[in-house]
Length: 509
Image (cartoon, rainbow, N blue to C red; front, top):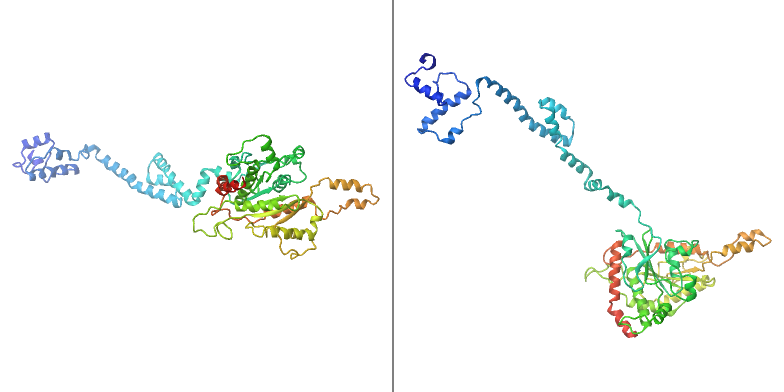
């Protein structure tokens, strides 16, 4: 035993060696050939002798039990560690590969799996992970706006849908002078709208003119007009067709506002005969009718770009006095701050005033005489000399080539006035029938002399000039269609509660 196992029998006795084998403390002499794990156990008892104390429980648990395997299986862990070392080194390679895929995907994942020797299932599972980097590549290439539209394509399609076309007008202010919200669904978030309003006395043709300017032609049936015109029965009774304020918007985003007649005798007759109760602040029906007209006119002077004043004869001085009163009682334009100047689009920077157009409807042949036309322009200029309303420089009959022989300097004071002849659709048919009895059929092809172009030609020229009117800024900010609706609702509420109108009605009563 001593010759084969130990060279110093005095130090390592047989009995002590047997006890240490039973207690798993195999310590051999320094010349004994031991494996790697046994060498670690050889130096462990020497450290215990240097400490001169027996090791405690936690030190015994720190022994490398994982490496203590049978000698027959020691080669397999070496191979497994070598093979397992490759995936450990491959993990950074896979991360670098995934990072390279985000820039230039040149190496396929199958070649990587074959070079590393890993299983295909593991590589495929790891290849499914870079879905987030692919999403980031799409965001980086397409941009945030393109990603939002790609996520929700209906947003882009809704912008391409044409706006809904209106066929008939709806109420903006009902006959009780209450605000209506039904027009909100036809409005959009765009700022290129033009607001055109109309005022005039009863029976002057306001609704007919607004329908022809908005969506209809003279050849159509009047029962299908955008604004309801006065029926024959209503004309015989002397009543009014329009009540309150009617709203209509075209595909060109032009807002037309038709109103009830100003200073209407039929509304006054309806108040008197039907024993309708007046509001407590009004004592007389006539005062109530006049204040209604002033409220509507002052409202249009605040929220419209263009206001058309329709009359069927020249001229009523009470109408000009009414316009000046409505201008005086017009609510002030709200501003962003007290020191804002030039924000409302007016000359003094504090108040907004619209363009006003005087439309002479149902004009006679004598009214188209250049001398009479010049006199009418001079009279209107004298009556509106002290007004802040923009009554010059927007509409011109000389620019329409209606009077080819007249120069641009014929009228020194040209106001916004336009003449419309009588609407007579059957006149050409009557001329044809009358001309068929003539001896010379050539004269039947020539139209009769009227002194002015046809009604269709005149209304088309008026429409082109109205749509080309300058669109000034109504308030201190640029309004969209929806913002204009809320702005108009606030102005209407302020008009009904205006202290200036209340004081004026008290002076009248």
